[in-house]
Length: 247
Image (tube, rainbow, N blue to C red):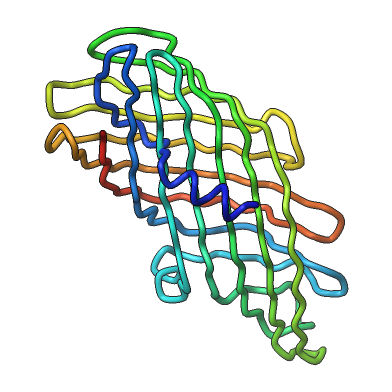
């Protein structure tokens, strides 16, 4: 089901560079983008394996990236809209373990993230807009940890988890002139399985034509989820660059 939903969401977009349309017309945006994010935090699977301290830079992620897909979308009619964002990352990298029981660890994790929701435009102006957001986060994570020999023999442990959250947020955009704009969003989980989950973005957009805009900015996402020994308490931050196609 997760993969079928992902394919549907390729027609949706959450990065807000929006063309102007009349209330009786549907407006669609789709943006493939690159998020130059590092990852830092604590990752745990099953005992007796210890919690792993991960600190992976963007360059390390690029060196060890097996596959990535990042795309967002928006469909709007009048003041109402549908929003979506898909992140798929398959990464292998190294990490640290506490003490001398193990001589380090090889991390291999696959993260699938889906944000799906609705929006309502609180303001109506040709120069700026502010939208209220509400929806669901869907998370799917596979952790594989290969512990290197220390005072204990090496071992490999894997575990996976799937969970959901409900989020609320705001998204805004303001035109500087007919070409340039500033935009951003902030969202946070208010219910669900995560102890905490929030996502903020701020950036600029340049309208190259009626069909194509260039967007860039900075995004920070924090996620804290634990279920028994399974732990994924991380933050991801870095620049974003993408191209929006409007129709």
